[in-house]
Image 1 (cartoon, helix red, strand yellow):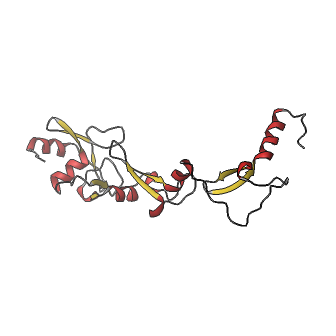
Image 2 (cartoon, helix red, strand yellow):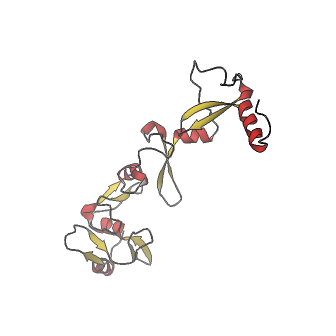
Image 3 (cartoon, rainbow, N blue to C red):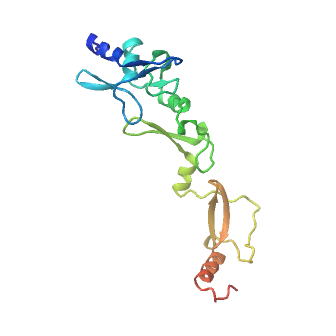
Length: 193
């Protein structure tokens, strides 16, 4: 990247040095997500990326710049680290990057995660267990389970619903009992026997 003296001067004039802080804050234009923007060579560049390229070196195309301090407007090169996308998600100070379980309670561990990158270059995690359930994979019922419901109806392939509770805990529900209960709710005077 070509850095001319004029652009470097504009960059240095936009630094906000605060007492009792090791961060060098960007006081120029900021995007709505908090990242600083520097207008450079008839285009724009994120201020922290400019700082890294100007004072540390080039950024490989498969790497991103991570704020160790967690402040998106910081341009202190000692607070910037060149890392890959997976590590960025793992070390991230954002709420989603620090989550250890998906919303349905499955643990985010190496064998239960899909990584994907959207059109803006953001990395996200998807829970493999949830994807399998969404795609119609039916969980196995443990062996030795009851063969009949509490009302005596046999659990057969046409008389059972497999339900998911709390993300991965599965249970069987008798289809006949469910239909009887639904009819009873629609017509309260109808006998449930």
